[in-house]
Amino acid sequence: MDPISASALAALVGGAGGEAGRQLWQSLAALVRRPFSDDAPEPSPTLQLSTAEPELTALQNATGDPARAQALATALANRAAADAEFRRNLEEWWQRARPLATSSGNVHNNISGGAHYAPVLQGPRLLRGYVLYTAGRASQRKLRSACYASRP
Image (cartoon, rainbow, N blue to C red):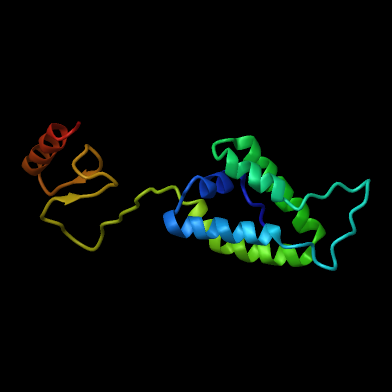
């Protein structure tokens, strides 16, 4: 199983992905709250295996704390190593959560396929001095001055 990064957990608990991220976080909480499966080892004084619920609650109470996010990632990995059913369910959850939790929010545009004769504005914040592609020098000057004039 690919490890679940602390930064991905912190992003999800912090609201990444909006409603979809909130639902993913709730499904992780429900998964963590399930009891250990029958194939998990019995608790013993020498084996300190967390359900990951205390770590999950701690991160929910302090969403900006990277140490708590790391503690949850470690607890999830330990529980997955000890409980095969939990590991399968966590892997399924991570496959759904990874694209949302690890996206950077960057915009990647690719213009190809011939000549482009009109100005093309690209970027996450148009008219704020970001990426500008234009057909000619006069267009570039007009767009650049418009962008710089509209900056806050």
